[in-house]
Image 1: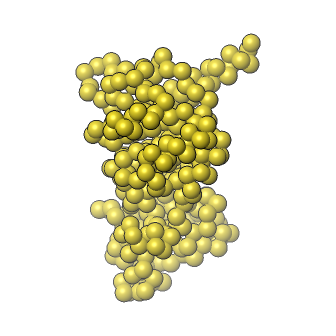
Image 2: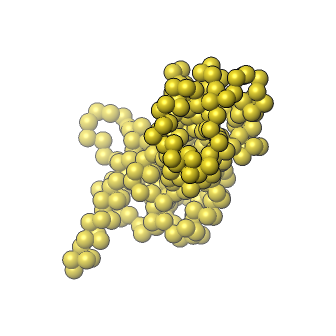
Image 3: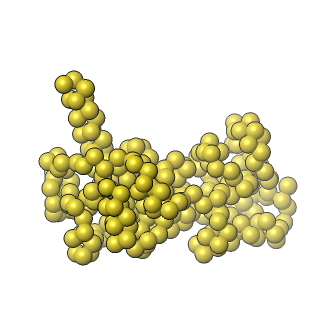
Length: 270
């Protein structure tokens, strides 16, 4: 039981709300039942869980997992747990987790048919949604380029709904070096563009695809666009100007999966 907000453990974990401290400590906070449940199901060892009495009741269904994995679990006053939270109405459950990302080369050399590149995606919620969509659509990894939101920003983590524990992730690196690493590993870089490029229904999707999603407002600079192997756009059938970056990624990733599944069926049938 943690009773004081001045408890050294609590003070240390509260600092994890700041980016620099997260990377210095190698830890981040995952809050809410969904995220914590997915963290418990993952292979990563958690440092601990801190919960209020209300949160402890919600975690009861995972008591066996917590016990079998030997995860330290502390009960604290509701206001102490709220001090670790980033939400207006916290659920009273926070897990302290090790950073999850690896080097870009690990993803590039992993051989996944599709990886996603977040290039200057600056809204944490959008980045979190990209991770969730990459997970749902079966992408083999997501790379966060320099200039994007922090992978471990509380809003990013929360927006993944636990998918941050499922998808191989890499952080850092200027866009040009990320592109070069992926090309050397045999990936074709296709950049999503709101208005230019080949329509997704006509595109010839490569066997090894790196789908690049650019900045929410202005896409990608010309010099980076020139480095891509192709531009792909989503047909706009109504009057909307464009799609949100995470919605666009979902449409494109599922189109890639649909086409590949159809092609596999043709090969098996032929």
